[in-house]
Length: 416
Figure 1: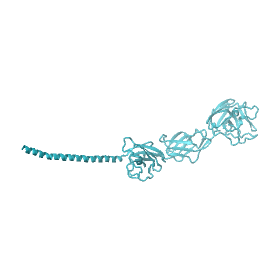
Figure 2: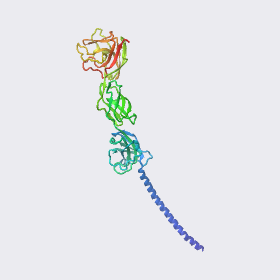
Figure 3: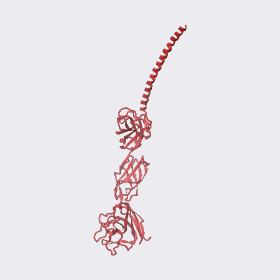
Figure 4: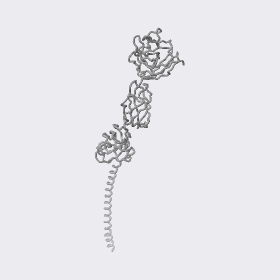
């Protein structure tokens, strides 16, 4: 019976062993299935991750509508998936209604054929698995100035593929041809001009630049007024016309109709002297560095006999003339100038291109008789208002050869 029991026990154990074997096999089978599922799950996650559109950081969030600028796009180091290779990376700009819509607008999974609102970058460079650069294309054809830059691991952008990164990008439209007022002013500069156009930034910053030039020289004190106007101060410039240009993020445009006219003019200080006294005068203008004053001609030398002196040589001089304009047009042998010099600011010294100093002695005057000009150091200059004028050649008849800054500064001699 023990044998039977033992046999029964052995026999009875067989099913257990079988069950154990079957259980083990089943467990192994389940493990195998689980492994397959795990691999599938990983693959599924990888596939799903391909659809995850990570934010990417651009080196610039805006630029000119015409494009042509290169920006970099950088993924976070923890982002997945990453950029694959130079052969498998492409960037497409897709037009959106607002910049805020960037976060809610999905990049197209079928980039398709570029159109006015879907534009491919033609040059994208792989820099690392987290950084690329892309040449911004011409984005002026969009219905708005706002775009989503979508990055694909697909350099052709021709087949269905999920974007892996995106960022917002805005463009600035160029201003319309600007106009300005006033349209003329002194060559010494310093005049405030109001410029009118379109698409001007209302706040001037690095991301929203605004500048202007006049004759190729930067205007100063540029101040935003509105999206259609701003003010700026003219720089010094040569007498004549100068073209205005305006530069915004949208590009540079020039005033195609009309130019700004620089007119002769200087600023002097002081502008008065009591009769019979002398004063040193600070003359501010433009173009003085081109003048070479000859000491023998501008020292205020008196011949003492009414004969010609250096005050009327063909070298530069600083004159006082009666009335508004120095006019030597009738000057010839035996004939005085139509409106010539009445006094001279002597011993001029050029400080810089836009400044010189000289001494005006109201105890001296210039007399002219039959075309002979003499500096008289003992005859007082008559009281009255004169115009100080810088000329590059005192005895030349035509043209008048004023400096590019010459007349317009009133100087008064009186019984103060």
